[in-house]
Each structure stands twice: as C-alpha cells, then as structure tokens.
Amino acid sequence: MLKHRFHFESTLPFPSDDVFSWHLREGALERLVPPWINARVVKHGSPKQVGSKTILRFGFGPFHTDWVAEHTHFVPGKEFADKERKGPFRFWHHIHKVEDLPSGSLLEDDIEYALPFFLSNAQIKQQLHRQFAWRHKRVLYDLTTFSLYEKTTKKILVSGSRGLVGSSLCAFLTAAGHEVWHLQRDPSNASAKIIGWDPQQDGKNGKEFEGFDAVVHLAGENIGNKRWSPKQKEKIFRSRCRDTWLLSHILSRLKNPPKVFLSASAIGIYGDRGSEVLTEESSYGSDFLADVCIHWEKASEILNEVGIRRCLLRFGYVLSPKGGMLRPMIPLFRLGLGGKLGSGKQIMPWIALDDVIYAIYHCIMKEEIQGPVNVVAPSPVKQVEFARTLAKALRSTAFARVPTWFLKMVLGEKADALIFRSANAEPTKLLKSGFTFCYRELKSYLKESL
Image 1 (cartoon, rainbow, N blue to C red):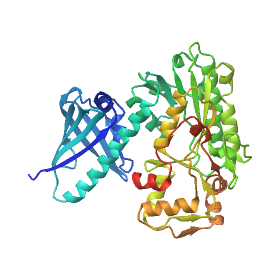
Image 2: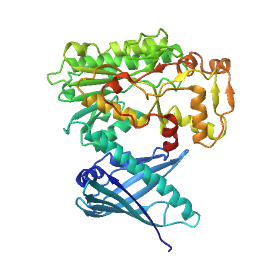
Image 3: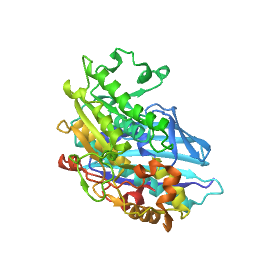
Image 4: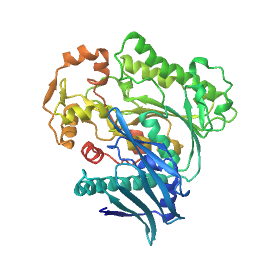
C-alpha cells in the first residue's frame, strides 16, 4: 500500500494551552468543517479518551456517507491523534500537534494516508492544503475573538439553534467554553441541555428559564421558503411577533432573569430606500416585511421595564455555502444561469456568517450595546455586482437577465421584499463599539469560502 504524507503548520499569537484546549472542546470540530464541504458531526468522540470514535456524515445530494475516526493517542497539552476506521481512504492517520513558541504557539497537522485507486494524489494534496489553510485561519479568528473579551463562563440559551445562524453560534459558544442550552418548540424533546417550549401552550411558570446570563432568540418561520399567501404571512408574523412577546413576558417575571436578551430582526425594517444611507436611527418602511420587523422588535419592549438589556439584531443577507440565500444560488451560477435580477441596481446589505457569529458575541459581551444593531458588512453592493462577483468566484459567467415582471409573477409580493428591495445599511453601532469585521469585502469572502 503506497502511503503519502501531508503537513501543514502555522504560528498563532496565543499560548499553546489555549490553542490545545480549544481543539478539545465540543463545538470545535463543527467550527473546523470548511463551509464548502457538506458535512455534519453526528457523534463526538473525545480526543482525551483513547478508543472513542467521532463520526462525520457527508452529504451528496440525497445520499450520504459516514467517516468514522477513532482517537488513538493523547499527550496532554501537546498532541492527539486519530485513525480512519471507515471512510474514503485506504489509510488515514492524523496527528494534531501544538508547540510552545516564545511569542505564541505552533499549530501542526501531520497526516499519513493511502488513496483508493480512483483518486489523484496531486488533487488530494491541493484539497488538503486548501482545507487546512482555512481551518488554521478559523482557529486564529475564533481565538482572536475570544481574547477581546472578559474570560468568564456564561450560561446562554439559544432559540433557533438548528438553523444556519443558530447552529454555528452554538458551536462557537461551546468551543469558547460557555454553557449552551437550546430552546426548542417540541417539549417532548427536552433533555439535559434542551428546554422544550411550545408557544401554543404557554402555561409554564418559567422556572426552566431561571439563571441564564444571556438569551439569544433566533427562531422564526423562514420567510423565503414559500409564497406569501395570507396564511403564510400570518404564520411569519405569529412565529416572530407573538412568540417573541410570550418569551419576553416569561423572562420579565423571573427571579434571576438574563442580563441581556438578543433578538433577531432584519434590515427589512427600513423598507425599500434606494441609495439612502441607513443607520440604526433611520425611519421605518411601510410594507409587510417592515411591519413584521417593527412589531417583532416591539414584542420584547417589556424587558426594558425590568432592566434587561436588549439588542435587536437587524440582519442583512447572511452568506454561507451551508445555507441561506447563497446555497441554492451556487449550482445555478456554476451552470452560468446567474445574473441581473430586474434592474440590478438594488443595494444588497450582505454579511458573512462568521461575522454574524462574532457580532452576536460582541453584543453579548459589550454591556454598552443596546437597542437596534445593523448586522451587515460595511461594504454593501448592488445586485448586479453581487452576481458578477459570485460568478467570478465560481469561474463562471453572469450573463443571465431575469425581468422584473417574471419574478413578480413567480414569487408574488415576496419578490419586492426579498429581491428588489434596496437597503444601503451601515453597521454604525458595531463599528463605533470597536467591532472588527473579518470579511469587509465580498470578493475576498467568496474567494475564501466557495
């Protein structure tokens, strides 16, 4: 059996103990899966427990396959290793190492592997280099974020924890060493760190909600999945406004309430504003989506009366190959079917998923931040520019033109709210409070993440 070797290393400005302990925490593996790989962790093994197994499930359209790795070696503070027990390679042995340096640490990945006959080693090495360059940068970004704030362990409750933002946030918080709980709608799903809460049957006295440092409320009906029939619009409104109101009233009656409540909102609150610069102080729009956002934010006002700090997270277009608006666009753009929608002049306030996670953490940790917060990158782009940049990142073209009348015929009212709306929003509060974006430019983000 012909074996190959791969080595990747980088220096980090953090003590080796911090780097090593980060890799051992649950949530770290999820953070290390590159966004262009469709994989999820279905079982966590512990590197400290020799013989334990970690299982990654890789998706390929409607199919999936599991990669099973067994932890085989552990030296506290220095290194740990795993071997493939089931997967695509004939042999795989991965040693993770961390060494002390005078000004930080050296992070190393040593891999010995053997390929099945149908794989090219040149291609595999290229893919491994790209993956581990991305992984090491993710370690750097996460540890840098942790270092900016007070090192305290917080108990944090997250609703919508199975969504795109929620799942990434929970992995990040867990890897940071915080105690993360999940608020889920199915009460029968209650377990050690899951609170089952059904807003339709809101009869609880709230004791399950006592003692949290922060509550991050991200749950709500997806606004993009279905046509906006009257029934769907009611569902969207109810899942955001009514449920937020019910949750806020539960928290307001607690003996030990959270110090901060962070609730999702959206840039849609401003309506269609052309090229007008929009800050957190700008006036509201008047369409359905703006009305939903207005009532969504008002639903938690009672928390102000009992001294709970509120942060209203007005999200722009959250970008990640793992989900949201970007995921369904990628295959179309690969085929050359992307391009200008309508006039293409509408301004899109985008933000990378990682910056969303870091911004939420920033709002949790910075006590001076409260009220509405525009969670967008500082460089919004016109839709036609977005299409060209995405096509270039995918080495494709963006010559398609989809007329306004066609999109309105297919999508109805949703087209005006999600496609033709123009919102030149700025992250004023984030920038003034010292937040640093990892991805300020669309081109660099798409190049790195696709």
